[in-house]
Length: 291
Image (spheres, rainbow, N blue to C red):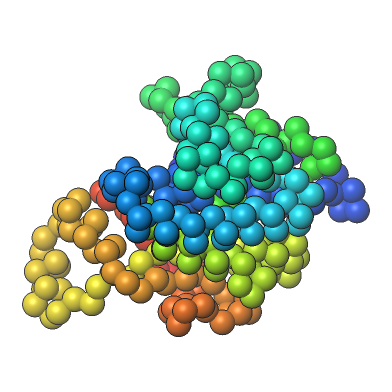
């Protein structure tokens, strides 16, 4: 993501005056498996059973986040106003009481209230908006008092976590966790449980010695035969081939080994900060290898 112009520095504050960490979560496909629900019969018994299990995990994640951040918990969404409450009431009703303790930001609505002087920083050279979520975060975070010690960003799209780049330019420590795109309820439950196991969420928010800032949870691409590897070397991937390659059963969790053993026997891989990029064709997160 390109940031145009010079970012305003965050208000300086002595370390002893710094506030608690803040956490900013996406809603669709990060807390609620919206894509999966839209493609399925919302009244099916199987879906309802999956959502029942997911609710308990969401409640635990939000409750722990509220405790660790002293209520600096934000849900940032580009959806229409009212969608978060309506969808939560319908699919995750036990989560509704926690929403009154969380600040919900609708990026497109918030953008209209950002001053012109501040807003101009988030447009590209051709005057198109780089990211309404980026503009919203950079207009809200500097106004928080006390200023957060760090910001943790969690979402399923590159846009959700790329905001960290701008926060770091402004002098704010930022950590990110990129979830898999379009998860099933069970997959999303596993992703959120990963935050709970081994105190991962606690460490993301409060551990000053955490050696890694950026994490990614994604599905493994299926192993290729030698014949298919030769073919892929001379042909460009299509959107359908990119999408189908994500439909596997094994996740790769980009996490430093010090965070703890992986859950469910998943494979762990280290993702150095700053090496996560996005496939321009299918929007799939990829890891850049050092040369």
